Length: 141
Ligand SMILES: Nc1nc2c(ncn2[C@@H]2O[C@H](COP(=O)(O)OP(=O)(O)OP(=O)(O)O)[C@@H](O)[C@H]2O)c(=O)[nH]1
Ligand SMILES: [Mg+2]
Image (cartoon, rainbow, N blue to C red; front, side):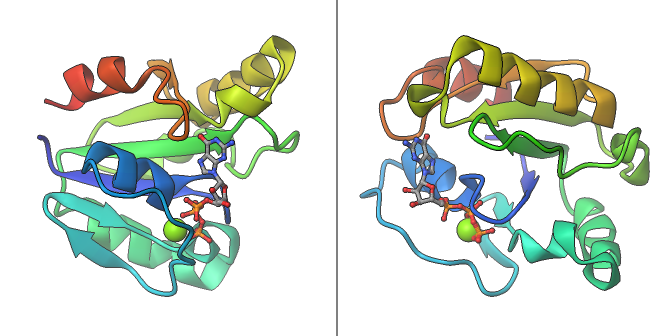
């Protein structure tokens, strides 16, 4: 698997997706600090949402091959500034999460937020049902 940095708002599903990718039990655990699991760096959503933490994401991105920007399909506002991917040196991949509990229109809105952030490639997944996970695994292999 490529070295990844997971970036997204609070509760968008970063840690749950990591649990799914690692084949672990899906169990809610608030991420309080940045940590590495295997080749994935998981980050607290606050690092994206609070301006004074953002530089930590950029520093961490130097350690990875791909930045994964996650947007929950259940959240109507974007957590990313337009062009946010230019903040990172590695390429970015957009992932819409929680598609199992969102309408197609909501999934599209989340994808549009990721495109506006600069992601040119968007995948749609559910860490709970496993929808779209095979495609994501193939992409990050
Ligand atoms: N239905 C559904 N719920 C999900 C999915 N992914 C995550 N959740 C739920 O969303 C909540 C937040 O998920 P987390 O994975 O902790 O979110 P996070 O992005 O790691 O959040 P922070 O650590 O606070 O930044 C949990 O209650 C998860 O069970 C999904 O694909 N479908
Ligand atoms: Mg987390």
